[in-house]
Image (cartoon, rainbow, N blue to C red; front, side, top):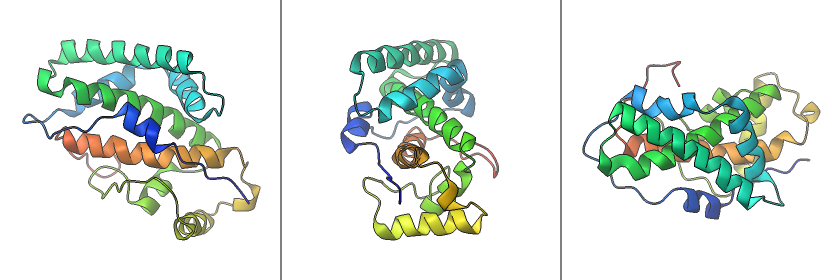
Length: 190
């Protein structure tokens, strides 16, 4: 029916090292700064590069480096503590890539909020590690989409790998937010 390819665990592991919980909580402004500095076109391009079977590693590194520049500017401007800077870079990279996935999913007529709810993702939720989707999880997703009015059989098959990439990225982004002691936004936020 469709291919739900997840982003490899190796990519997520490479992009994000284990982070100890820092002492000082970061503000919403500090966390949102890099994502606001990254253009939607760059976020989209990163989402394409991540899922490209013929990965263009040099381009991916160059594009990721531009996120690092934005993150460094935000850290300096908003005084992110030195102990949190490594995690902040990881968070900035993954948040930007996630924004590209959100845009593509939304453009395809699907709602990221429904995916989040179905898989317990987002601020204040469980954000389980997602590495491989089980048949049961795929069925749960298809059922949730159908209940929301999506005609699954009419969805462009090209979106399924994007959905598969979105899930582990979203989980990791919100795991990092928790590690950075981010405040949980009110319902409807983020």
